[in-house]
Length: 627
Image (cartoon, one colour):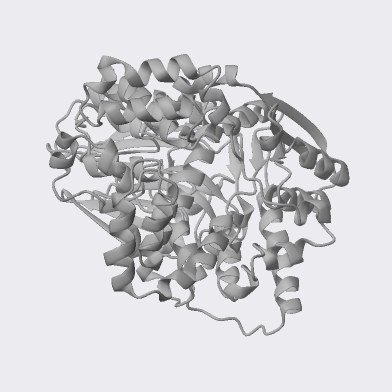
């Protein structure tokens, strides 16, 4: 696992020493991603660099790595789990290897297959290959977006890329002008979606996409997508269960390849317990597991983590998160680069920090909810689906105006508005923190005017994404939408940044693309069966994971921020959001901010998520814009 950085200069005449110094500065900004060593090359127009966290081929896996002719150079972030079999295939085709690293396998695969090399890779990756012979750059990102990649073509014609946004900011030609559509999207969902970047002129390479840069032009092409159109020949539930169990076992097994200590996150939920269960069956030694808990009982899952740890005989470590630890939130803001408001980043960071004292690699259970319909919001949407049978004119001309007429905080206001919407819009509204109703009160007149028709751009994109799902089943559409949005932009961003912050590699077996491609053929009614979420997954894990974990009520990886905002965090959050410096940014109506603070303090309404989103935005502004 590493971090990569680089740029392609428009002018060849730029001094090498100057470019080497700049590349060094870019690489050092992500030392946390790779503390073991740094590798760079500055030649012709190209400057490629990386920071390495050594996992495989510790002695000879240094980057950049070249092909035999030394026309191609690669820098790589990730792990390729099928590299040994791929290497044998490439050797049979005449390729000769200098190392035993998965990195070298990629560069030879590119030499053999060109851009189609990505279809031969099984793993997580973001890599850049420069071809010195024809002066072209090839960049690719893994299928689901486990590894990040930012890029920009500057006004001067220079192409810059890196694993984190801060790499590009070090380059010096990146404007810090806010993209207001990205800001609007952040306030809607609590994260900046893949289609946006908080700074204008910077882009994220989409999951399952590769990029070419040549002659000053950028072209991108998607090579993989979630596909719900295929249907398996399997007919019986029992057969689905048998195949699924073996697919999960294999996805876990290939992720146990490591030359450094390895363990697993264990929350006590179905997903992480299933991963640990499979690891304990495959591994000869006890699995090292790590869990986080809270003093607040409604958020604490340690009881179930202990049950799983005891059942699987793991070497178990625990840590209790307290409000005092929120003092590290400024560090977390720095690691995310963009505004990011998923408060579970805090316990994710703490469990990663604890695990790093014992291991260098962990397996996690992320992705199970998007793959097997595990979120309770899928059940809620299913229950409300009948509302779509109401005449559209009735919903639009009666329910919507009625909801808009009700005063702020009125009971049923949000429900009436939600039920007035069409199916996909209803779901998008339900996952929004600041929907259209709340934005009409939150946004200042200046912000509304500056958005100038871009208001709700993210919602329109989400609507279009849901429409691309190759299935008419409502659950499949939501799984596709969440897999393209919430999964890479929130879940995987959180796991990547918080583990890399402490130089820990996280592997995600449930997001193995071969497993995903099989699960997509399973009928939706076997994932969400009645009101039972993850039905087929739980059935496949019976006999491996204890029933008291499999069939307990879903809790989620939440944080008691509602209580914290009214206790230890009260003065800090109230103070920052009410400061003249914050209010003068001109984004929000001060009256509405004060209303949120007052109602939450007096426990009239729970505005914890809204206040957290606003607080994270202001802390981000102070670090990345104010400087």
